[in-house]
Length: 244
Image 1 (cartoon, helix red, strand yellow):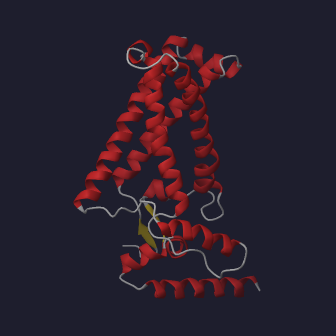
Image 2: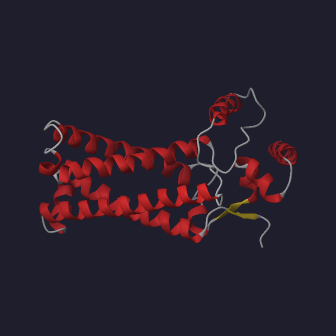
């Protein structure tokens, strides 16, 4: 085993991530083509898929696939946490809020080190819950738009235009979160540039674990958090010496 690399994700998590990525890409392309149908690129996409009816069909079936993957993920997570196989590492706790304050002070030079994060930090939790809950919102509003007659049997007619507004605007919000937040952190962030290998290999460097997930590293290696902090401090000292 390579001591300089720590396994973060299983093969199943990697497959799940890329399946969701492909489904998301299909939803974005077909969704934007419908919203901005007057653009030349949108017309090209519509014609390439055989017309607006076929494009809508692809979009809807991609939505069903999104629901299936998201529901399977949520059910698996709940079952594994309930059985004790997984730690509830994505649960938002009070420490996440104190970590935000700690990191702000660190970025301002008030603190000497960032927050001691566990398996996931507050930024990753925000992104995870934002995408997960948004997926269910998009599926729910999409079903209302797909079967308007059925839903207006027991809901007021105003639910249809409301669902349309929410579906399109929330879809753009998710796209912005993925494009500006997730892609930056996975590709353009100085910590991982030119790309984060985690979702390709399932591993990240031990050096990153010391910086970003020291609490988890301490648990994996059977060390105390203070030992990891000392290692982090030693690394920062060496970096300063190299810069000088």
